[in-house]
Length: 280
Image (tube, rainbow, N blue to C red; front, side):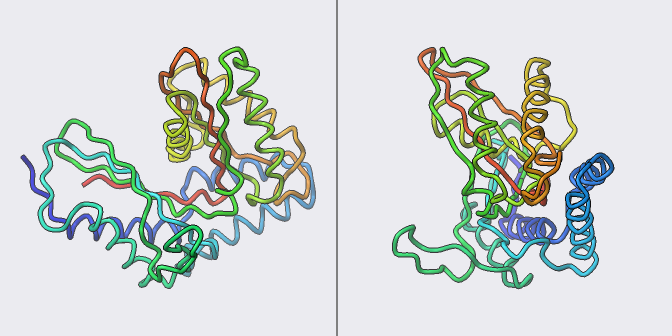
């Protein structure tokens, strides 16, 4: 059994959220440059230039890429041979969030109750998803999720008879209805299968996959490309002002489901798609 001190977890979470809010991931930057070279709209090109410049300035000056520094989403794969020493794991994570949002002077957007709506003052609690896996390590993935894009996400319990075309239509319609609200160009995470809540978690998990990486199954690799082409043919474009760059990528995650159902979830993130990860 390997022992890991909670202080190391807190320190790691702190660092990851600081990095995620300051530094655009290299795969996203490369995709922005790729689509900038292909964009046909003059306005779209100008917007993409500004997005790229903003990301560079944020990284150099260590300022937030976006003023909405989000609600903190954390995925943790906990090795079953790990023993946490000190605080409870959840508290260790929330301490890291508190420290990052204080030290970085990040906007604190979390409220204590969805209806009473009093700010918690430290951007906690984080939304944490745990998976118990083999081994003696902890894999931590973090995402400061802005709500301009989160509010545009959707889930639908399709009928099995809706099939592939039903999935495609729902994903494309969700993006179409979102329009300019999620600050396109966007990245689209799609979760298919499981139950209602499993599909939603899969769709968010999909956003951590590197842009440009291929799905391990050819069927879903083709579906990702089909969806991306359909979405970019909508003409929404950068910031909703027209163009071919509505989405930088579509990532799909799937899970077995009941023969009577076809759950599909769409989680949208803006062009920054802030996320970082580390293994302890």
